[in-house]
Length: 155
Figure (cartoon, rainbow, N blue to C red):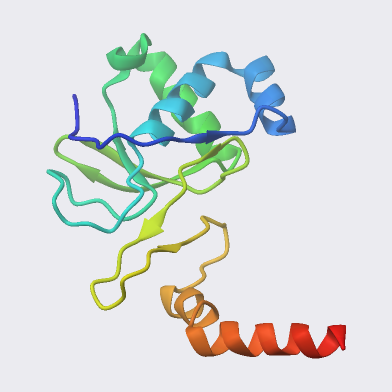
């Protein structure tokens, strides 16, 4: 299974303690996690074949990372149990999972707004921050207020 992916990059934190634990406990789960990070949708553009939200990826093709179906299921359960991913729904093409822990891989998600000319970056966290909260924090008024208060503190 191949999805139309655009060129991009994924941040890999090689100093993460979770990385060393994952490699020691279940190296094939690391391969599945890297596959999920590679396939995870990082923008809110609507031109992809599969309807995915930011941070979601389509998996289920266990042969693509050299595993058997049994190893794939065990790896998926390991990643679920340790909080790396969440299963969101099943599709006729496979399972759709959400990357929720960016400690090892950070997909650098970006929201494109048609109203604004700038892009906004979001963080994937376990808390359910709403897009409204993130947008509000990045609004020009809030940024100017923060800059003004920082200037006043220096004086």
